[in-house]
Image (cartoon, rainbow, N blue to C red; front, side, top):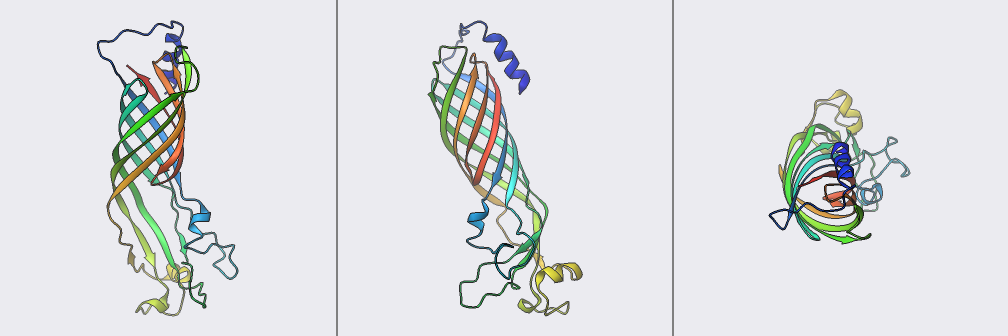
Length: 236
């Protein structure tokens, strides 16, 4: 990425733009993103350790790291992007105690969940629109971008779980909660979830352009989860 930016800065010494036999440019970009669901949202459905009487260890965070590649067609202030990416789950094993809606609160009725080789591959399409912040006739200029798109992905791995003994028929610690049974009992199974999942993307960001040859972008938004990240590449 830095090599592409350096090439762009060399070209920035000459403000003239090379004439092409087409009215659009193409881009190849690399991107990295951090995905997360804020704890305040998870608190709506699951207790955390700061709740009185709850399991004392912190609830796992739902997060992931994404590394991807983009191929884009850009014309004036519009860009059409084809992308593919690998998603590495940052979810750790831990105790999930769902919020009780009745008068009785039971902090021992949750599940212990352990991700095993949990990851995914995704592909999709985005449309971006650029609004110049600084004059575009300068060798280095800044744009605001807004865009959105959709994709589909395939998730591999398993979510292995232990239930409380009182919730199932078992001979292994039948009266113990899941956070005890997970140390002494075989797992009770794997969580069922769709292997193919849709992806909704909404992106806002700032793009710094170097003589229409290279760029770097800081961005954030929604990528099924909230995200922030950086991307960059070259244009030809």
